[in-house]
Image (cartoon, rainbow, N blue to C red; front, side):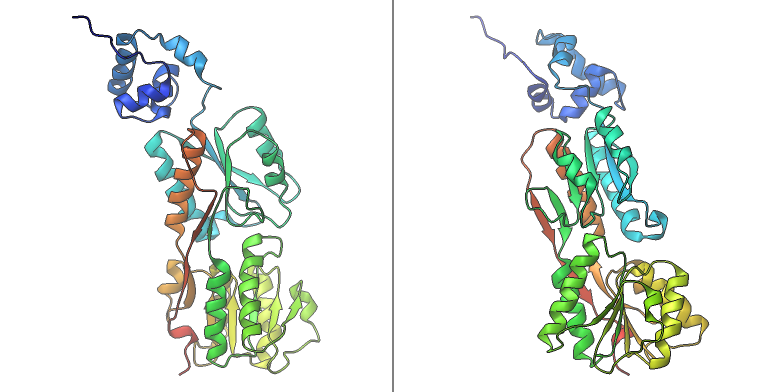
Length: 354
């Protein structure tokens, strides 16, 4: 009795039969990228046994895969200074390695996305992850017009775009509610780059909490040097945008601390650390002399003395989800377009009344 052996016709079927990823099969066929000798031999032997020539399968691939995924960071922030980027890069790389992909780090500015265009035009990568979308993001607008798989860590302001984000609005609303429940109405918000969507979302949560406590608005300053000759009005919060450098933090605190604000709210941990440096140098104690809250929660916040109340963002899970989703997009598996993770406000000693 003759048996008819199953005909293998594409790399998806090969991957399924052998229990490996599609990218591993592609590496075996192309001879490119990292793959163990034993694994490659096993795949090629399987292909030969089923009467399918490797060069025919190679031609069936839509493009020659690079097995690289670009992670794009903004150049207006010091990547090595921000724990968010370090954590995301680590977990993205750790995740995509399971499917034999590697990370390529790229950069973009608000006005210059030439590096991203080169990656797409020269097919240097199989997918792209944008890590900090801008309010009017040229990179996202450009990628939407290409066939390059891409996703955004953050809220791109477009529900059609694949996105992995934390619920910054609810989290920052909870953090601000805590500040106001403690009675710190004459507080100061040290905000970050006004063009980053994550900061706009955090500010939205902040202002929602103000309104829920009957505070209709806060006084906003676009730059720290606008504070000159202005003072804190009792019961009206102040928000200063585009705080980034130690010198800008120092200048703001030098100007506002004589008016004895009850609490500093920092848009992220980098700003918080710089505020702590200033307070320490000037012998200003937390929480005895002033309270402090941060809209992020790196190890520096938890291990500070005293520990800093902060909005906890699940960086590792963001990275893992982003890594898996971009690989699913590249390899044609189902994926969710909108992925939202919770962000919890952790109350510690720095924001509690003594």
